[in-house]
Amino acid sequence: MPARPSPRPFVTANFAITWDARISTRNNTPATFSSPRDKRRLVEIRAECDAILASAKTIAADNMTMGLPDPDLRATRTSRHQAAYPLRVLLTNSGRINPKLRIFEKTFSPIVIFSTTRMTAPTRHALAPKADLWLHDSPAVDLAAMLTTLRTEYAVKRLVCEGGSQVFRALLLAGLIDELHLTLAPRIFGGRAAPTLTSLAGDYLPQSTNLRLRSMEVVAGECFLRYAICSAALAQSRRDKRD
Ligand SMILES: NC(=O)c1ccc[n+]([C@@H]2O[C@H](COP(=O)([O-])OP(=O)(O)OC[C@H]3O[C@@H](n4cnc5c(N)ncnc54)[C@H](OP(=O)(O)O)[C@@H]3O)[C@@H](O)[C@H]2O)c1
Image (cartoon, rainbow, N blue to C red; front, side):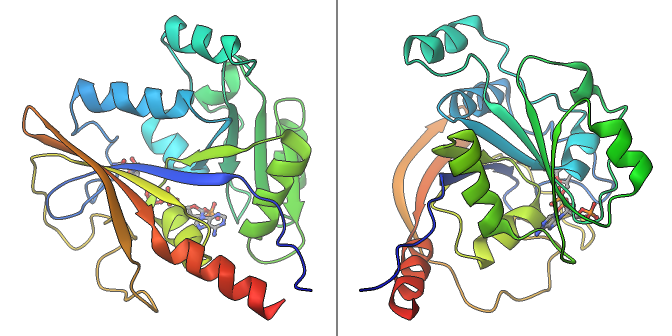
């Protein structure tokens, strides 16, 4: 009998992109090119999830706290017996993360950091009172193991990845993304140094990813798309066969 796959949360991702698929400018200016309606959708998607995941780089670039500002969304969560705020999950391979970031000033929900043993002792020491640290003894965080930890230790059943593009790419390549929310903003940035959805333009993915459109809504020039990722299911079934 094939071994049971490790449990992991359902992983959705949420990005705003320009019509030329940029998620930011070459200067990594904060992601403010989409509308207030898109920002509202972002928090609605967060509200449906047990955890929010982003890289330490994106948290710093966007000065994010990963909150849920609308009390109605929090009330809906508590009526579903969920915590008022989703768990906040940060990712860095190098362990370079500034303990003075604004996110650490907000204590509305626990923060969990996945990194490697490359994180320096002073950084570990500074972060330990503010977050749970999971340090993998490998050059990079084992993303599948990270998701299993989130499922088994923190009861995360649904997680939203909010970027950035390198993190999305790594999860996609590992077959760990199930769904994608894309907001197509009516903007064109251009520029080779501006990150696209799957990191900097020019680097091929080893294989293409098939998406199945689940919904599409056009509001005031912006297009809100929701896709199921077919390849994640395929990768999972391949892993099952191999096991
Ligand atoms: N438009 C949108 O919806 C949206 C969403 C999110 C972000 N953004 C924008 O995107 C820009 C940042 O995106 P980005 O692609 O340059 O960077 P990113 O994906 O946010 O972060 C890259 C960093 O994440 C860490 N990382 C990458 N892969 C990893 C893995 N497999 N495991 C663990 N850590 C990993 C590495 O950090 P270490 O070097 O520390 O190891 C890497 O330097 C910002 O400007 C932000 O504003 C836009």
